Image (cartoon, rainbow, N blue to C red; front, top):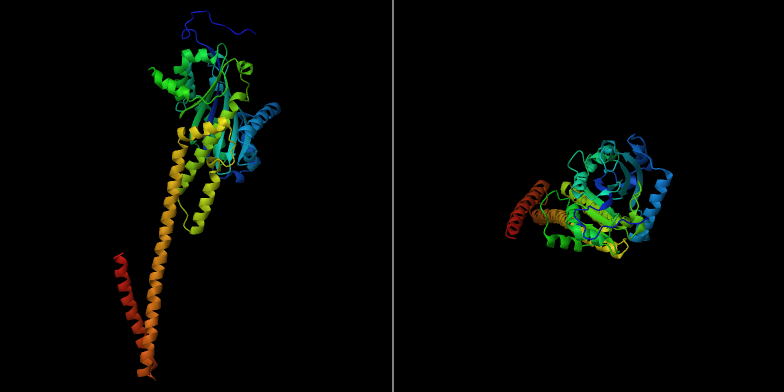
Length: 424
């Protein structure tokens, strides 16, 4: 099939390119139960009993799992997979009937759930759309999670009961869409010459009609993570983008339902890991802010749990691919993960300081009273020895001298020690 070409002198802005768009919606959530406590049957039963979700066919599930396994082995590495820190739960397909009459908008959503052993989870929703003309403003409206008519709200209305049944809440912690665009009739270089500002606007999910400064657009596009010719991969605070042109023959085809494009999978895996990192950090911070350990043993257990939960952040089990490493490093700053990590560490140090200070105070108080008791007792014994010489046969008098001397000595020691401590 011949690729369409534009006549010489054509105004690129006037002739909108044909694009195949697909959208991945990522919702990070917290679960009451840790992943190890979630039973397979309880998860699959929750999905199966929801009439609005159709199960994947065996072919769809096998295709997705094969693609996923290949990409995970390359991006995350075998040690990470062997640790089984994340688990995959295929959910099924949601028919978005309310969008069936809107031209171009996705009308099906394929959902997968990824749970992490720290008690957080990530809903991954793939929404393929048919080929259409470039319309960034329209897509931004579709991805808006504040409007009931948007794709996120439509999907979450179905996922909310499932999330609640799995031990979560009615709300997600973070929402991040990733737009996968495949150019159907021109190269990426030609496309960016005319529509680079539109791409940055989509990355920011910017609804403003005012043009962006060329320097701003240039700076954003310079943060391209894609090493392939004809590809562009960008990450922002409010969205992510993965764009490829027709130099890759597979990218010119319509997106398959059920499976995100193969070329976007490494980027998606890295985004998932970043969102899980952030969810773990936020959950740890809230736990530390709400209640802390009351014993030294509890503090040691908490430190061990924090270290284990942040294994992905420390990067001990992640393969160091050039792409994944660069995106992860920048993404930790862009998505505020570094700030969340610093907040958790500061809170943990505060809890540690308060707990150790409390124990030091208790030890000081204990030493204070031990000094008083032993000092008063020793003086009482001395007084009893002296009294025995004077009152050899009067036991009551000896006891009175012993107890009296101990009490007086105790009172004097308390007064002296307190005065000395107040001067410190």
